[in-house]
Length: 575
Image (cartoon, rainbow, N blue to C red; front, side, top):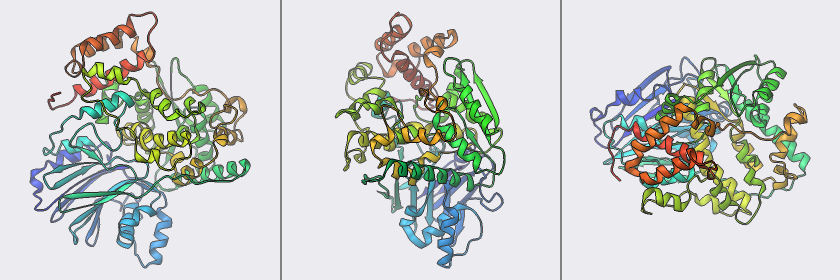
């Protein structure tokens, strides 16, 4: 994984931008080196985490009038090279960055349809004086941009754009309202009015001061008439293939996150069978929420080198560090443990496999079992810390309330509410919440995280399987558990789900955190944005009442994470 930067536009004067600071801000994403290249109307920058072709894969990379700066991995790199060599293309390196560049020279804008991987990249055409941009189908790699008059600045992270000295970020209070509702910023916008994201599954051209984007991939419903046993065999085959892809595209050792749950255990078991060396596994555990004994069972079965970090308490300075790095408000309760386990793994390997995406794909959440005509509405309400009325009370008005949290994909030709919920998870929850967490928490330690369950071939097949293959007699992820039962006993496979979320109720009641929360929420930045009276009511509900209201701890955590994020902003802001 890496970090990229691009600045383009007519009559570009690169001395107007602090490119050294922009590159330094991405150092954690690419600790192994950096590069830059200047053209007539474009500058490309790059920070490298060396994974493939360690000697010759440096960027920006040029081939004639085309040049690329790229973040990600192309899993079908070798297959694409065979196709391109049949067309007479000659390669000079083993890097997948060169594969993208050669593919663009042959297939133009349609090249993205051939890529199987995770990516965000820019290609500058010095002959046409234009830039091609693209982001992977699920938004696993970030891509932000900003317009400076008719010039465009692009980067892997917001902090790099702000470091240019050309960007004066303007808070988007409607996006903050989205955060209060979802605990993250939707993946087609940012927390700033004037900083944007290339949405997942989009590509486009920047030319003459304008960026024109289009969606190049859709997840569509297709009827599949297949017996259960055949479906299970196909899911197994696709999952094994997905793991192999993510093991094969690397010149460095690969490990695995092992929580002890169904998803990461299955990934670890499959990976172990396909590696030529002992698998390194990484786990965290904490009081009140511990699956470590199950992780150890899997580790022992595969004879893994197992590394464990035990979290005895919430360290507020570490939470602040995570929130600062994320660039935007984000309140997943597993952000902190994800940071801890990523730091642990980064000391041993550069790449890990994870089980992320299985719950969304195989219907692993409890709301998936409650089929009704209002399932999507119920799903949104379930994850919403603050209701409409509560958000109005916090803001003191409805000026910033908005409903821009669903993509048009959620409503396109879907046969039932389960498909709508799954589409919401894939187009919003996954890229905005889950993938943001694993990308940022990994990259702040120079660690690449690969997620086999998000393989596109697997995703398109499983999305179209019958509901009863995924949930049977109330058992969630039924087909996946049947596959896991081929490796592990039913006492392991069929136990209740715990998840990776942290015990925030316990943490928030520790004396250190409690005192900190009272101080910051009452005297920090939030009181200039929200009603202090309403904030105090939430503090009283959580800390003073014997019977706390529903989601009381979640509300405090969401407000605390927002306060910590606001407190590190360098710029002033007005409501």
